[in-house]
Image (tube, rainbow, N blue to C red; front, side, top):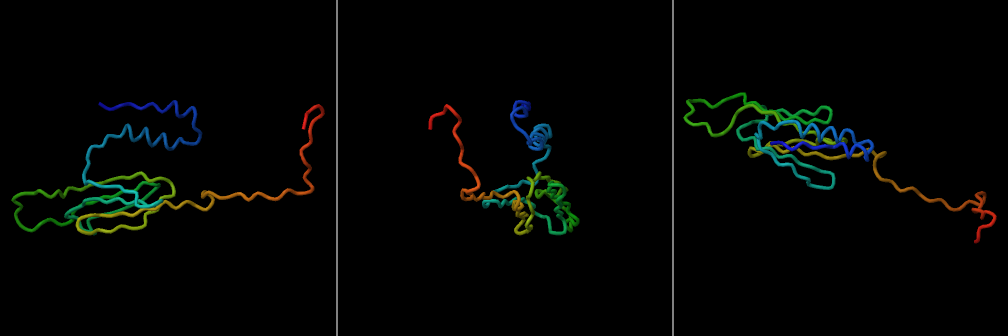
Amino acid sequence: MRTVLDFSPLHRSSIGFDRVFDLLETAARTPQPDNWPPFDSVKVGEDQYRITMAVAGFTRDDLEIQIQNDLLTVSGERKTDHVGEILHRGIANRPFTRRFELAEHMRVLGATLRDGLLVIDLKRELPESLKPRTIPIGAADASVSEPRLLQGQAA
């Protein structure tokens, strides 16, 4: 049984988070039919992340990584099969597609395939306009008058 989440109280007190609430509602509604291939997602630095997928038996030519509108899609389909009669198939070779919704300003740095593990490195790169900045405080100017007390107020 799936728990239904009500985000309406958050809508009342939050402004500009519509996309976040939409993502949460979509995630709550979307069934996860297949957990294959297994993967890890790790934060490896301040703004750096890594996705590691177990794709044993797949070659570079069998895998495809695409990014479009903050959606990272990893898919795989084995193009060649073993030569000879298969007596037992224990290594999965079925086609797959995994989707990862990326936050804004995430960039894929690269991907490597080694020892049956596909590693995708990501980094959040905020534009200069969104980075925190310090506002300098200027010196008092002689042309700016001091605040005056209103009549009847004590100093």
